[in-house]
Image 1: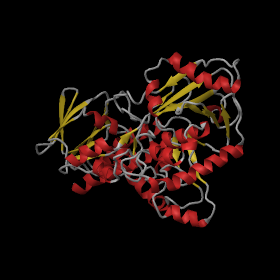
Image 2: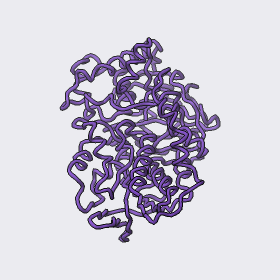
Image 3: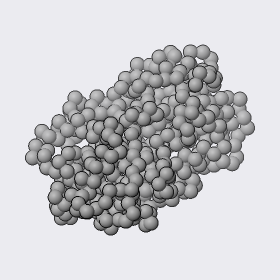
Image 4: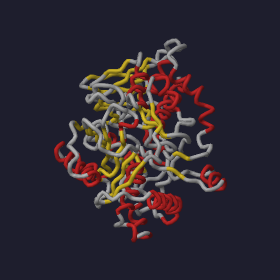
Length: 476
């Protein structure tokens, strides 16, 4: 999710080095690199096969049940339908989209889950968003101000130097990592002088925890795994759910259907949902990793040990988002406002919504990891009070409370139990492939947590759905 992370390449050798290995971050905007070009050349064909509503095949007599109407499930269902399969999508919520969920109750599109297209060059979401009518705005990291405790504005040079040092550390720290040690353990050992520095608490929070998961659980060996797309970062301005609604068009989606059992012991798969049993030749399970971890869906026979181990070992982080509106704007006319409090992961970063919605006086802020989970036990009044402590420290005690606030509770949301997957201590990269492995050529698995190269991203989820659809198409 992070839109902050950027590498500043000093020379061509660094570009080549980064291009030829796994990159530090999956969603970093890698300036001037050619990462993603092979996919860019393939995208027109991929999108034509997965999203074109015309030219569908004749019915082939096979039925597929897709569990979950997030982008992975909808992408799979769309392609399968076009290849002649009878496809039924079972969704536990009251609308499609999964973690592509948009709240418009305040008159502005507040994306509770995904907000950005992370790297537009070669990214399949770029063209898909255009086809779906999703409007976007390029957010610029350089448009920012940073404030310390007491409202003291931090100089750009101090911030930039610390940011560059962080990049250098992240680029090499995995060499000191150990399979049984967390990022936090290794970092604190190597850089004890930074542990209590407020700017470094902020950088680790918004550049690492936001993107990669809890520092005390994040693998010190694998935090750099994954691939990226180059190009600008663009935020959705009229709602990321436009993509989900576009993909769901003409699909048989049954809402408010909670799946409790998948029985693949017989010739056909039996799926129990809301007390009803539906049968299919194939099933694609696209529920989030957090849901799989809770075992709310019973599989008969039980899933292979390799898959249950992967479910346990891959991490699921928590990021919560908060949108606040006012009658008038009192903040700086920049894209991003950062604040460096003593407590890490707590309302330390503000996105100026007014930059892409000029008539809307709103800020969006975040809470991560354990503090993000803690917010789910707090009242709206408590949340507003904590946020305003930070804003008043920056802009003075006379600024008003917001008129409205919207919030998320992803950790306790029974349809997700977390925000997105990450490489925790104990995770091995093969676990992502194990999560993607089909069982008995009957039960298939998709979702961002099944994409080793693009886990925790919207484009990873989309590509996983296409991947599983292709497997079933090959089986006939």
